[in-house]
Image 1 (cartoon, rainbow, N blue to C red):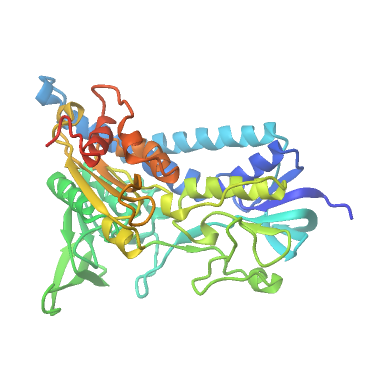
Image 2: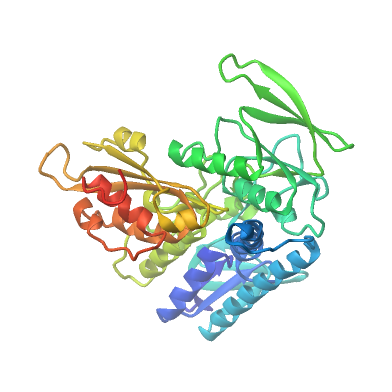
Length: 476
């Protein structure tokens, strides 16, 4: 049987375009179907890249405000939100253009329109009034995700926003209420606060990033409070009035009794997570197996329940991160080619929150490691105050290392690192190295023997490894 393509990918976000790039490199005739004007999905157009562009501006403002520490007389007279948005858009446009050129150079056909799966080897593409069918030996679903909605508070694009609308504001809000406690909520809080916006964050629990190591979530919250962000813990939003008044309930942590409070806010950002783009009728029509939350079920190699139909990226669940999608794309591509490949280990995928200081979580917390059955679990906590580069930046931070015995309760077994959790300046840049230590089960002593250049922020990880191995050098 002949096909129009070897591989058709529905969706061009990180999982989709990475699958297309790799399958093309492996010699497969590949097409990508994208319903929007630009390739790149949420990450490039409405997520990772534009938010980090805004946070780059936040860092610049933060550094300018500290310039007097170094005897530099620098003042910021005003923030031009329209110009800031234009700079962000220019960054996004450049990245998207580069990706488009790269895909074209790999002989990947980019087909604009709404793709749907008719059967394991047949796809329909609808672009306005035009409709056509294409066939492929393999179809990869990479339909992505969208911001989750909060019941009773529909996004209107004016007062109540999702992250999509928040990225396109051309006027700086004077005050904002953010509902949420994850990366999206915290990154927007950091950005708006840096501009001088009054920011209130409503948290359901007693700290943001509640599933993370408590040392890290505490450092993040403390740092953001010091910068001026206001947190209301054990709270939930109850109403948004037309006059700009936001009402929320705060529960007593001990009794559970609720008290109502109000705050004035120009905008309300709903940042409570994301949901998969799998609501279209064709998912059920094609017989694609979804879990109870609507995510596509796959095996460890990205196969769905349908033969020759695969899935990658946010639509499959997991951590909903671009670099997770990249790894899934490589696994699926190699599997399509019949090559030996690795299984994606979600546990070792770095989770990162960017801000004035970054926060990183990889692997197990101490409690999670014990619950998972690891023997000899130990936790090493090292504040970053002794690091000269951290001190130069006027920052703070903490590194947490979780170790366990590699072979059950055998006292002679090598101790390995099963979790690394960091909060500190540019901590995101250390995530790759930390992940490799965990992923490859490198013995703690070997990992601690790694040499980190001095003076660098990377020494925060090196010093913690040494202390965990019983050889503290520049820390107690």
